[in-house]
Length: 147
Image (cartoon, rainbow, N blue to C red):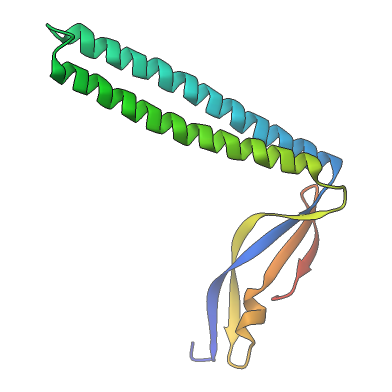
């Protein structure tokens, strides 16, 4: 810092050019994620039912209000987790629909990465922080601003 410079971390936006390969990869990733959520939903239902069966099996009187409360608690937890997973799936299905509607050569934000950047007295900090990388099928086509 004695030389008037400082190294900072900045976020770089990754933008992608929509190509047939990009669309195919994006749809495959979303389909796999949706299948994973479906598997989690199935496992959740199965484990929830096993737990309820176990609670009832271990009880001398399955109609005891405490047993009923335990069962209701498990059912509430399963329902809450099911709602969370179903919302994730709904969002993924919406993303999949949006991917299908994208036009070729359109530029979309794909995510962010971090990098280090050196700044000096007199630099425009806003410009230094505004950086983006444009990729086409994984290959960098352009590095924008903030070098």
